[in-house]
Length: 421
Picture 1 (cartoon, rainbow, N blue to C red):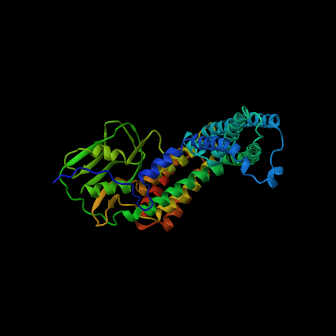
Picture 2 (picture 1 turned 90 degrees about the horizontal axis):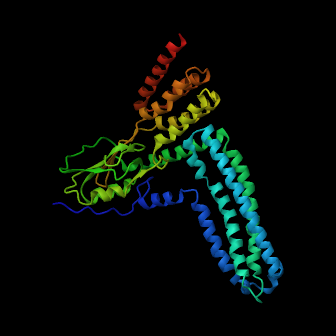
């Protein structure tokens, strides 16, 4: 008997992300969110601070602003003007760094710089200092014979001190962040973190290759809009399948661009299609850009793009390409010593509930090696470093991956033969 699909509650599988966590991450990702939260905090503080002067003990008053209304107005006006000027400087420096990163490395590393918390908090502190000064300045307009809000004016000094400290930290951070070693390390570290999270999530997968029984009726869920398949809420999808005694099959690997109206997933044992499309769309993220939420191949793609840019005739920097291979070496070593995850996610009783399309080690090795080998074939350093990497990977690789590595070694040797002749 058919049961009406029931939306899954927000559950987190080991190493995965719930719908709530993913939406919260998406909300906090835009560059303007942190400065906006700082500004909201500043407005709230600016409205409350003038009201707490009466709560300060008389013994502490000498440590607060001692001037009159005109002095307070002058101080706050100066702070507001200075803060908005330096905010423009911080924003300009950020734009220069983004332009440099895009032209020197790859446009796909821009998201890393835009999500940089030091830059966001620096801009937020300066914006908050400006907004706070204006808010307190407004309270002085109709102050009449009331005493000057000493606490509120003194807090503006503290905002300035904090802004200066953040500016110094920002200059140090921004100059270091555009170094090629830091860019590569950060990109690789983000991929390592995602890889570790994916490996922890393997406990929700089948160990072997369980049979996928025929559950009867099949319903195809189409993409509601065009976009990149960016993330899956696997825990929620599994819960949804269990509640409806169905099996959900995702038809594309993460990172695939799917056109609106084309098949996105297939539900086995769905019964009549009522409600399935809306339920699945809530737990499948189609984004305008690929990201490092769950897409491991995108982490490799960003590094490979940097190497290709470095090997282009206009830049001709094979040493940077070698540094990219160094980071790829570490990532591939982690992958080669682990088994390929079988893309079947089971429930507590061992029944297959979600089937995904997972990149294999062979696919990821091709992505990491082939393009760099092609564009670096005329370099002395690049082919030699790639051979060293593959030789080292073969030593510790699991048996299921060793043959893949050996085949890649033969492929590179065959490509080098005609070139050498």
